Amino acid sequence: MPQMAPINWLLLFIIFSIILIIFNTLNYFSFLPSTPTQSQTSSPQYTPLNWKW
Image 1: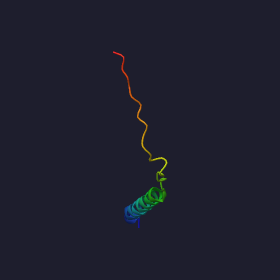
Image 2 (image 1 turned 180 degrees about the horizontal axis):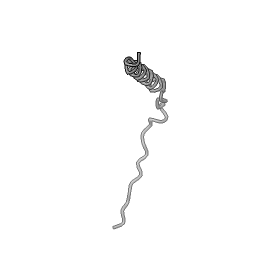
Image 3 (image 1 turned 90 degrees about the vertical axis):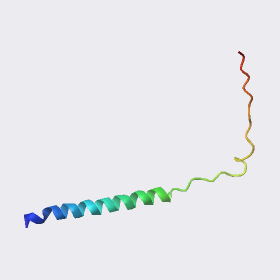
Image 4 (image 1 turned 30 degrees about the horizontal axis):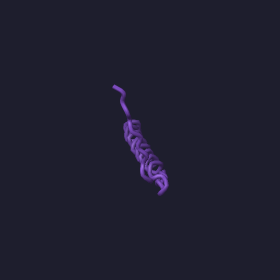
């Protein structure tokens, strides 16, 4: 029945949207950034800025 075709397009759109959201969340949460070690978090070296004006 051709009158039922929009329901199929709506169902395809909903399925595609759900798959897209799941795929993006899995990619986002699967990335683990490296935590800074103790040597990287040591005291920062401050260089004085001597302006000559």
